[in-house]
Image (tube, rainbow, N blue to C red; front, side):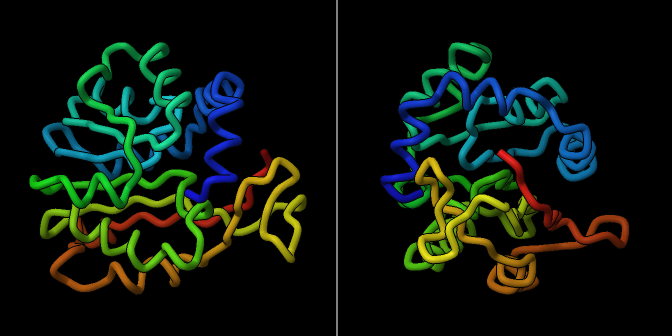
Length: 196
Protein backbone atom coordinates (compact mmCIF):
# COMPACT_ATOMS: atom_id res chain seq x y z
CA UNK A 1 0.00 0.00 0.00
CA UNK A 2 1.40 3.38 -0.89
CA UNK A 3 1.56 6.25 1.63
CA UNK A 4 -1.33 8.24 0.18
CA UNK A 5 -3.66 5.24 0.40
CA UNK A 6 -2.45 4.42 3.91
CA UNK A 7 -3.12 8.02 4.98
CA UNK A 8 -6.76 7.60 3.93
CA UNK A 9 -7.15 4.50 6.11
CA UNK A 10 -5.32 6.16 9.01
CA UNK A 11 -7.67 9.17 9.03
CA UNK A 12 -10.91 7.27 8.31
CA UNK A 13 -10.43 4.07 10.28
CA UNK A 14 -13.81 4.11 12.06
CA UNK A 15 -15.97 4.65 8.99
CA UNK A 16 -13.82 2.27 6.94
CA UNK A 17 -14.13 -0.48 9.55
CA UNK A 18 -17.88 0.07 9.73
CA UNK A 19 -18.15 -0.36 5.95
CA UNK A 20 -15.93 -3.47 6.05
CA UNK A 21 -18.05 -5.05 8.77
CA UNK A 22 -21.06 -5.24 6.47
CA UNK A 23 -20.53 -8.81 5.36
CA UNK A 24 -20.88 -9.83 1.75
CA UNK A 25 -22.40 -13.36 1.88
CA UNK A 26 -20.55 -14.33 -1.32
CA UNK A 27 -17.25 -13.68 0.41
CA UNK A 28 -18.27 -15.73 3.46
CA UNK A 29 -19.28 -18.62 1.18
CA UNK A 30 -15.89 -18.39 -0.53
CA UNK A 31 -14.12 -18.42 2.85
CA UNK A 32 -16.12 -21.48 3.94
CA UNK A 33 -15.24 -23.31 0.71
CA UNK A 34 -11.57 -22.34 0.76
CA UNK A 35 -10.42 -22.57 4.37
CA UNK A 36 -11.22 -25.51 6.63
CA UNK A 37 -10.90 -25.91 10.41
CA UNK A 38 -7.32 -26.40 11.53
CA UNK A 39 -5.75 -24.60 8.57
CA UNK A 40 -3.27 -21.86 9.43
CA UNK A 41 -4.41 -18.80 7.44
CA UNK A 42 -3.07 -15.26 7.08
CA UNK A 43 -5.45 -12.40 6.24
CA UNK A 44 -3.29 -9.78 4.50
CA UNK A 45 -4.68 -6.28 4.96
CA UNK A 46 -7.08 -7.54 7.60
CA UNK A 47 -8.97 -4.23 7.74
CA UNK A 48 -11.71 -4.31 10.38
CA UNK A 49 -10.91 -7.89 11.39
CA UNK A 50 -14.21 -9.18 9.99
CA UNK A 51 -12.77 -12.05 7.94
CA UNK A 52 -10.10 -13.04 10.45
CA UNK A 53 -12.68 -13.16 13.27
CA UNK A 54 -15.09 -15.15 11.11
CA UNK A 55 -12.42 -17.70 10.19
CA UNK A 56 -11.36 -18.02 13.82
CA UNK A 57 -14.99 -18.66 14.83
CA UNK A 58 -15.08 -21.53 12.30
CA UNK A 59 -12.03 -23.28 13.77
CA UNK A 60 -9.46 -21.88 11.35
CA UNK A 61 -6.14 -20.91 12.94
CA UNK A 62 -6.49 -17.36 11.61
CA UNK A 63 -4.00 -14.49 11.79
CA UNK A 64 -3.92 -11.06 10.19
CA UNK A 65 -1.68 -8.16 9.30
CA UNK A 66 -2.88 -4.57 8.79
CA UNK A 67 -0.46 -1.80 7.78
CA UNK A 68 -2.66 1.16 8.79
CA UNK A 69 -2.17 1.66 12.54
CA UNK A 70 -5.54 3.33 13.16
CA UNK A 71 -7.36 0.54 11.30
CA UNK A 72 -5.37 -2.08 13.24
CA UNK A 73 -6.45 -0.42 16.51
CA UNK A 74 -10.07 -0.34 15.29
CA UNK A 75 -9.77 -4.03 14.45
CA UNK A 76 -8.71 -4.83 18.02
CA UNK A 77 -11.52 -2.68 19.43
CA UNK A 78 -14.16 -4.45 17.34
CA UNK A 79 -12.70 -7.94 17.67
CA UNK A 80 -10.82 -8.35 20.97
CA UNK A 81 -10.61 -12.09 20.31
CA UNK A 82 -7.97 -11.24 17.68
CA UNK A 83 -5.55 -9.84 20.25
CA UNK A 84 -2.27 -11.72 19.73
CA UNK A 85 -3.41 -12.93 16.29
CA UNK A 86 -3.11 -9.71 14.32
CA UNK A 87 -0.16 -7.41 13.84
CA UNK A 88 0.28 -3.85 12.69
CA UNK A 89 2.58 -4.68 9.78
CA UNK A 90 2.85 -4.43 6.01
CA UNK A 91 3.21 -7.49 3.80
CA UNK A 92 6.87 -7.03 2.84
CA UNK A 93 8.24 -6.47 6.34
CA UNK A 94 6.05 -9.21 7.82
CA UNK A 95 7.22 -11.75 5.22
CA UNK A 96 10.86 -10.84 5.86
CA UNK A 97 10.52 -11.63 9.57
CA UNK A 98 8.17 -14.63 9.44
CA UNK A 99 9.54 -18.17 9.59
CA UNK A 100 6.45 -20.39 9.69
CA UNK A 101 4.43 -20.77 6.46
CA UNK A 102 0.65 -20.53 6.20
CA UNK A 103 -1.71 -23.10 4.67
CA UNK A 104 -3.78 -20.26 3.26
CA UNK A 105 -3.49 -16.59 2.37
CA UNK A 106 -6.51 -14.26 2.12
CA UNK A 107 -6.16 -11.11 0.01
CA UNK A 108 -9.53 -9.36 0.17
CA UNK A 109 -9.58 -5.83 -1.29
CA UNK A 110 -5.78 -5.57 -1.08
CA UNK A 111 -4.12 -6.12 -4.45
CA UNK A 112 -5.52 -2.96 -6.05
CA UNK A 113 -3.69 -0.84 -3.46
CA UNK A 114 -0.26 -2.24 -4.40
CA UNK A 115 1.68 -0.01 -6.83
CA UNK A 116 3.17 -1.68 -9.91
CA UNK A 117 6.73 -1.19 -8.66
CA UNK A 118 5.92 -3.12 -5.45
CA UNK A 119 3.78 -5.83 -7.03
CA UNK A 120 6.56 -8.36 -7.89
CA UNK A 121 8.00 -8.08 -4.35
CA UNK A 122 4.50 -8.47 -2.90
CA UNK A 123 3.89 -11.63 -4.93
CA UNK A 124 7.25 -12.97 -3.75
CA UNK A 125 6.27 -12.18 -0.15
CA UNK A 126 3.03 -14.15 -0.63
CA UNK A 127 5.05 -17.07 -1.97
CA UNK A 128 7.42 -16.82 1.01
CA UNK A 129 4.51 -16.94 3.45
CA UNK A 130 2.78 -19.84 1.71
CA UNK A 131 3.19 -23.49 2.61
CA UNK A 132 3.44 -25.94 -0.26
CA UNK A 133 0.73 -26.54 -1.37
CA UNK A 134 -1.25 -23.53 -0.24
CA UNK A 135 -4.66 -21.93 -0.72
CA UNK A 136 -4.64 -18.33 -1.95
CA UNK A 137 -7.96 -16.50 -2.07
CA UNK A 138 -7.93 -13.04 -3.63
CA UNK A 139 -10.74 -10.61 -4.31
CA UNK A 140 -9.75 -8.61 -7.36
CA UNK A 141 -11.25 -5.21 -8.12
CA UNK A 142 -11.61 -4.72 -11.86
CA UNK A 143 -13.58 -1.49 -12.16
CA UNK A 144 -14.85 1.63 -10.42
CA UNK A 145 -16.52 4.58 -12.03
CA UNK A 146 -14.74 7.20 -9.90
CA UNK A 147 -11.09 6.40 -10.68
CA UNK A 148 -8.98 9.00 -12.43
CA UNK A 149 -7.40 7.11 -15.37
CA UNK A 150 -4.22 9.20 -15.22
CA UNK A 151 -3.46 8.78 -11.50
CA UNK A 152 -5.38 5.51 -10.88
CA UNK A 153 -6.77 7.09 -7.70
CA UNK A 154 -10.25 7.59 -6.34
CA UNK A 155 -11.46 11.03 -5.15
CA UNK A 156 -10.03 10.25 -1.68
CA UNK A 157 -6.55 9.61 -3.09
CA UNK A 158 -6.55 5.82 -2.69
CA UNK A 159 -4.64 3.88 -5.35
CA UNK A 160 -6.75 1.50 -7.45
CA UNK A 161 -4.41 -0.43 -9.74
CA UNK A 162 -6.73 -2.84 -11.50
CA UNK A 163 -5.32 -6.24 -12.40
CA UNK A 164 -7.00 -9.23 -13.98
CA UNK A 165 -7.20 -12.64 -12.34
CA UNK A 166 -4.63 -13.82 -14.91
CA UNK A 167 -2.21 -11.05 -13.83
CA UNK A 168 -2.39 -12.35 -10.27
CA UNK A 169 -2.69 -16.06 -10.96
CA UNK A 170 0.30 -16.30 -13.33
CA UNK A 171 3.06 -15.49 -10.80
CA UNK A 172 1.37 -17.68 -8.17
CA UNK A 173 0.67 -20.60 -10.49
CA UNK A 174 3.68 -22.90 -10.04
CA UNK A 175 2.52 -26.32 -8.85
CA UNK A 176 4.71 -26.18 -5.76
CA UNK A 177 2.50 -23.38 -4.40
CA UNK A 178 -1.02 -24.27 -5.45
CA UNK A 179 -2.92 -27.55 -5.42
CA UNK A 180 -6.41 -28.74 -6.29
CA UNK A 181 -9.16 -29.69 -3.88
CA UNK A 182 -11.96 -31.89 -5.16
CA UNK A 183 -11.04 -31.00 -8.74
CA UNK A 184 -11.55 -27.28 -8.08
CA UNK A 185 -8.76 -24.72 -7.96
CA UNK A 186 -7.75 -23.90 -4.41
CA UNK A 187 -6.83 -20.43 -5.55
CA UNK A 188 -10.04 -18.46 -5.53
CA UNK A 189 -9.85 -15.29 -7.58
CA UNK A 190 -13.00 -13.26 -7.76
CA UNK A 191 -13.08 -10.38 -10.21
CA UNK A 192 -15.65 -7.69 -9.51
CA UNK A 193 -16.21 -3.97 -9.76
CA UNK A 194 -16.24 -2.07 -6.49
CA UNK A 195 -18.39 0.85 -5.45
CA UNK A 196 -17.03 2.40 -2.31
